[in-house]
Length: 298
Image 1 (spheres, rainbow, N blue to C red):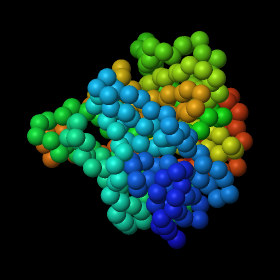
Image 2: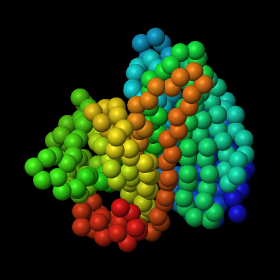
Image 3: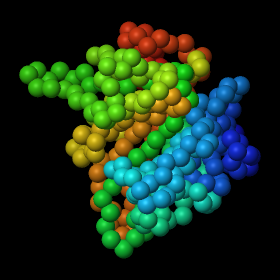
Image 4: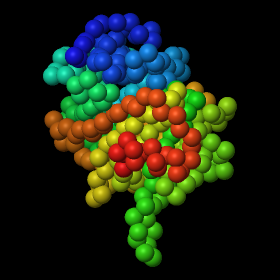
């Protein structure tokens, strides 16, 4: 049975959406934002970072807060970091809720998340929709960002197709990301990013035909998946998935291809989340491959 209740959580007024296997909290007073995600008897897997903010060159202040959010790429100090401090409209839909942000005055973009649970399983479906409510076409891509608490490690699948004399993968690194970072563990099948930084920050992206990326923490495996479009034109050197880390958080990010929205036009990026409890895992390729095969993740 899927239940909805109003509840204060992580210092926000929220709608709690739950079944017997998973619960999540969606903010009502700001957002759209999923600020909490828990298995029964477990703690919040999301990072919660009140007071962490960024000020844009024009003086806007963006509050990160933590949790899961919807942005639009490419990242820009003004258009991306538009404040989301106003209450959102939340309505019930079958098996879940729809959360709509007021139209961004600085971009003309309306953000909406449709969040549903799948029966009694620990599965969440989120449709992230951007709609152009302005008067002119806008080029962008939907960008779904999940901030998780540190202490675990990300699992980033790599392309393994046999391409003969041609390359089969590429990685993008941000200027502040050291490829000698002790928190980066390169493997042929998987790259691991350890969320145990004391200072600095790290970010990488890649074209991700597998469509999924994962995070292991507190004996729980969190997997999120978004479809990869092989013919899509992705920002950030072709990155459909990205991973960011600093001492407070680790982010698992998915992006849709670059698109131009005419006035009134929309684009949607669907993510599927699955949580697997009682998973004890080391950042070692053979062990990860065995577990993923057992869980039918490929």
